[in-house]
Image 1 (cartoon, rainbow, N blue to C red):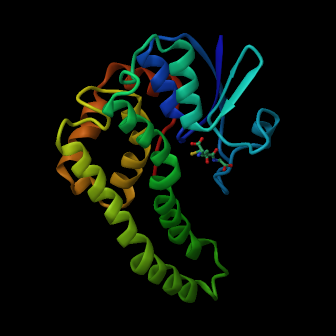
Image 2: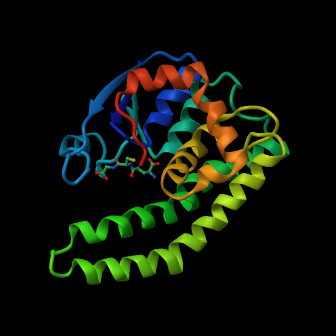
Length: 220
Ligand SMILES: N[C@@H](CCC(=O)N[C@@H](CS)C(=O)NCC(=O)O)C(=O)O
């Protein structure tokens, strides 16, 4: 049976959701974050050297990286679901989003999170200075980049409401995390197509079932 090494409050939630959408039985190994550092416990490094979640395990096969896990599941167990027909324009879009979500969209979001947390981790005497530098970097560099990405998502969703063609697919699953995070901390909730997308995915029974099984999930 598929085993998912799942860290609370994390991107890993998408894999549980994918498996629920496909009605594939799976087992979850739960990991909690360190309450101070928010990092994963060292025990995850015994599963994969980088100690990040998600990691999929099946019959001795270990697969890390959300996109690679999604492709593995679709290929091995998808039965033709959640991926457009090979060779179609929709399939090319699907592959694009599969790489873009973690390769491009998450970069400015992660930078924003780092700059937001910098002042609170600084020496109290240095805090005002660090805060000033962090705000400058956020406003001058990160926020404009992030805005471009958010506009891009909103206009991509304008046509059909989904990322790869006219129906729901695993491209929507991988894109859910950047959109959720950006709605929470970067103003993406002010964009109509993004908000409608988030409402639609959150209402899906498989999304709800995955949330119940996965435990705490605050993507901020
Ligand atoms: N691009 C990787 C990112 C993996 C990743 O950074 N996972 C986070 C969860 S959101 C994690 O494990 N963080 C805990 C840590 O860094 O210790 C993927 O999509 O699988």
